[in-house]
Length: 220
Image (tube, rainbow, N blue to C red):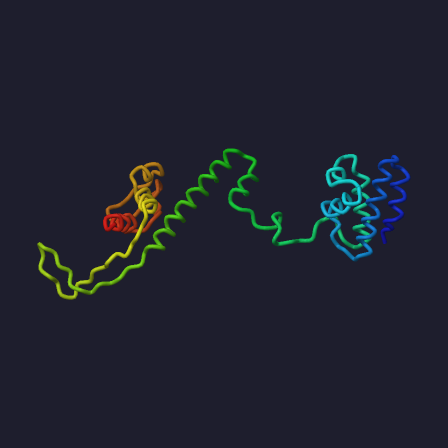
């Protein structure tokens, strides 16, 4: 078993007067930690307690000259059957799943960051437009006969009465989603049936997509 106290004595005997004093403070913190049965011997946690007693800070411990402090922490961690890594906390920022743009910062290639940044932006825009459509897609079926001034009444015809109540921003979002500029920018094509395909003729939106949005815009 690791004898952390013996390692402390050895490190202290070779240290300068100032460093020996810091080692003593740090050792008292670690010894108390071990006696309390604590398992967190991470540098961040030990340094926090050390600073409270006038001992070395986290930056001092992590510096090149702080090797003796790290050795002492490692010795006490091993003595306690733990490690210098902080216990897993699923709610901490370090352990949660990073957000899209946090992931981008981990890409070292600027070109790749730009490409994936554009993909994320377009994904978010499509999702927002879809959510807008979902939120205002309630239809009421009116089974009264449909009457046009130039056509006779057809018995049993079904009319869909729109109950949409879109604001100006939502209307502009729908217009932008089917604008010629939008499709030209992405090199997409639209069929007469409202189907959208990319430059490789792969389907982006099914038949009726563009036509459906045009009908919605016409009604409002």
